[in-house]
Image 1 (cartoon, rainbow, N blue to C red):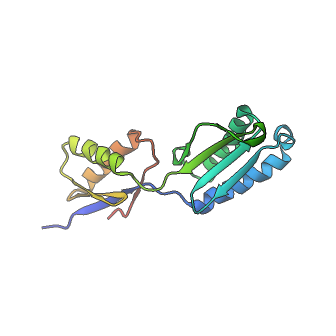
Image 2: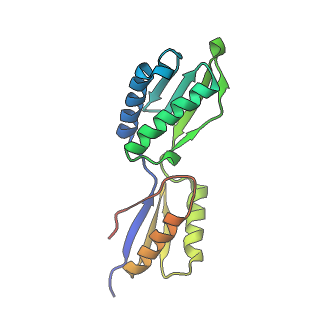
Image 3: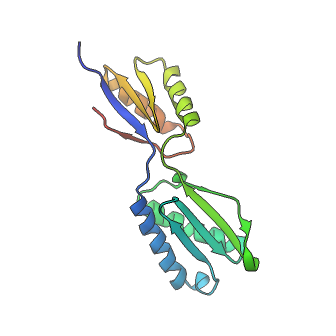
Length: 165
């Protein structure tokens, strides 16, 4: 009997690329004419995987989010990887918006992905392993069909397909 082929479904973000995008955005805040004198600030906590924007108004905070989003896209990071919270009032009439970087697949999303793969009725096995899924099948064509199906779906997090063997 031939050995099964497999791949892993993961959701990871390169934090160094996020840090680079953050630093480019911080530099642009000091140079761009419409944001230079606004008093907007951005901060990135690598350990907590959070980006904090402090701005004088909600509109300015949205502009900073757009600038950061553009930098993230240029660095190959999906915008679904950052989940932004609601704007909150801060000291001095400022607005604070905090974004969390999503790493790993949570249990509910993993169950939904596994159920969707099983509903395809293809000859493959799906296993949940901590924050990733492993899909196995004797046929590589079946695995390609599963990857194609998952690329069409939207689970609210960026998915990568690694360890394809």
